[in-house]
Length: 177
Image (tube, rainbow, N blue to C red):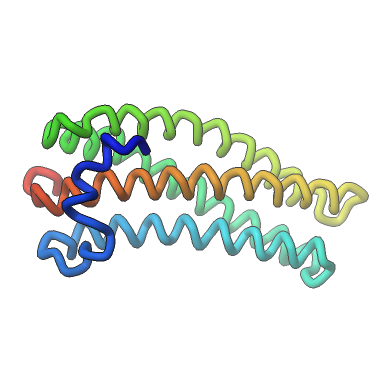
């Protein structure tokens, strides 16, 4: 995120967030959701590595990727939808100095849609081919795609947190709930 958009983060650095009275409730819940997304990606990466290393049988691997992959995509779409339709329009008006940050986050959401579509294709190929001759190549493609997704999601979530949390800590949650 450009330095100019970090103006509120300078006044509300990460290490001070939990001590702020506006942290508990919406902010802590929202950060927990972000942590969940990171953890699901890490779990799917670990399961895929275990499958590739012959430490995980095909059926449990396929079931796990189907379960966690579906949960990840559905929860992330829902999360982005509420941000785009509710939180971001309201928060955008709180401080004009960071308004351009919301355009960056919106662009990220659109870019993530493409990565999520690719992830779904890769996950489906790995699930359907877990017992077949292409099992290793499908799982390898999934692992590479998860790495791409992890990098994009990681950067996006960090940018989002650095922009959104300070504005909520500064202005509170009035009108957001």
